[in-house]
Length: 406
Image (cartoon, rainbow, N blue to C red; front, top):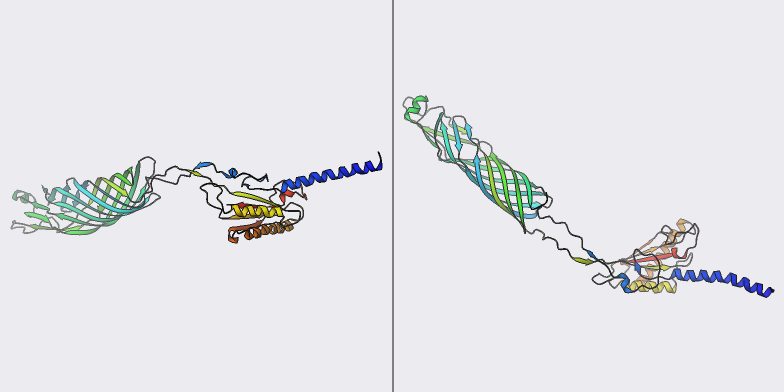
């Protein structure tokens, strides 16, 4: 082998690796728009790359058994007043009736608050004056205004049980309560008067109640209700009057002039409830998932200036930011620009270099018409490499800025 042939062979051996390295670097610096999850820098991707796949829209929370907002309710049913055993006078009541009406508000979490008006009436079955039982006469009337707090238990299905308590003020009235004692009875009851009656007066008393019920939801905010109520008031103090034809004991007897009547009731009601402005059941619709787009801009080692190819990529990112990524998707509203470096040099130096690279790209985007307030700029140094390498490795693909359009 001659000296000339040896020199030619050495030149070929030296040039070929450099050409291969140059080709690799060129390939690594190419870039295009890619989905957010893809970090490889392929050749230009067609628009179809960003066509979204149909997905089912998330279903908003909806519960027809839990009231949100204003509602009204009403009910009617039977009422049984507990017998009263006041000193000197006792009363027994027949089954009566009760009616209620309320307006309330549901808080969307099972709790409800309402104001209520109600009325009860019970005929008197028997009355006992001076230990002598008379036939019934008169009525026990109750009017009340209440403030109730209730809680609905969502157990699934159309039936919703609930409980509640209420307090308020009630007007209690004994009306037309009369009793007559015969001559024979007055003879066996010393001091008994001939006739007695409870004064037809009303008395305002503190009222309270407990509620247990269930609602059957039939849709569109309407429900039928069935409930039990225990209702009571503090004891009204009502006057008792008497008259007598017994000359020996005029207008006297063992019946007091006043009596504290017991006033407690058990009620069973059928009713309705209507909730206004309840949300309609959700309709499952097919929607499109709008993707983000990522652009990669590469840099020379230890540089943050833009190459001509980098400016072309940035120009493409600025142009497509005004266009939806797919049909029915909105245009880009924000661009995140993040700078990266390879792992040669110190962490502090590379952190600063990554920020300089990101700022260079952001400035070019602004020059291309993207508003500065729509661009987020950050640098992460060599903490997020695109290609894992050994320490102090000059990896071209790690020297980059990522532009993510959202």
